[in-house]
Image 1 (cartoon, rainbow over the protein chains, first blue to last red):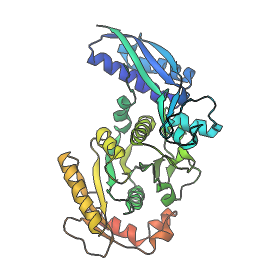
Image 2: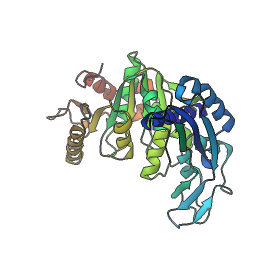
Image 3: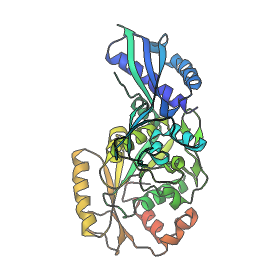
Image 4: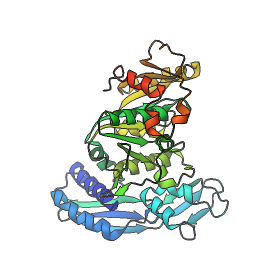
Length: 134
Length: 234
C-alpha cells in the first residue's frame, strides 16, 4: 500500500492546482505511471477512490491513468535503451518500485555496463494534465 | 503540463514532528554520522519520540553505527520506518542491499523527494537528519521542504574544517536557517571561540560502533550529552 502515499500526492496536487487556477470542480486529471516504478494500478485507483472523499473539489474527477514506457540514455556512451531486457531480481525490482533511483544501483547500460545513465522517460508518477470547470 | 505531485504531501508527512535537527558539516570524515546517530539515541533514551534519517546516500553509515541489520520499513499508506533501539530509522540502505548508490545530483534530489513523500514518520519530538558533506542537493532540499529545520554544525580542530565551517555559517545566516550551535569533534579539549561544545577524541569510540548500548557509555556520548543544553536541546 505504498501506492496510497503517491495517490494522496496526486489528488492533493490536483486540488492545489485547481485552487491556483480558480477551478471550482476538477473534471479530469491525467496521471502518468512511469514503467520503471511499476505502480500497482488497482491499489492506486482504490486509494484515489478512498481519498477523494476528503477532497470535495475532486469528488467527481476522473483520473485517467497513462502508462509511459521507460527510456534510458547512457551518460558514458550515449546508448539509448528501454527497460525491457535489463536484468533485475524480484527484490531489486521491489527496491526500484519504492525508490526508482535504485535503478542506478541494480541496472547498467547494456552496451558499456555503466550505471551512469539518465532516466529520460517513464520514471514514476506525475500529472500530465488537469481539466476542470471555472 | 508535467506536475510532480510528490512535494504536495511532504509538509503533511512532517507536520507532526516538533523539531527537525539537521546535523551538517561541509567536510567529510568529521564525525557527522556518529554525532547524528548518537544524538538520536540520546534523545530516545531520554524518552523523546525520535527519528533518524540518513540522507548521506553515497556514504550511508548510520545503520553500521546502530548495528541495525535485517530491518525494512513496513508498507502502510506509505512506508513506516522500522524502530531500532527506540529510534525510527530510515536509510537508503534498505533499498540498496548495501551496494553503491551512484547518483547524480538531480537523482539524489528525486530520491530524497520520493522518500520524504512516502515516509510516514507519525508523531515525533525530534527528527535527526544526518546530512551528507557539503552544500548540495540534499542540503538544499532539506531547506526547501523542512523549513523549520535547525542546523547542528559539526567541525574538527583542523583549519580546513573551520574555514569551510565559517562559509557554511555565513550561508545559513543569509538563508535565515536557525543554527543550534557548533560541535567540535576530535577536539584537544578546550572549546574555541564560536564552538558550543568540544568533544574530545575518544579511543574507545571505534569499538562501540554497532553496539548502541556501548556507544551510549562512551566518553564521546558523555561529552555530547553534556553539551545538549548549550545546544538548546533537552
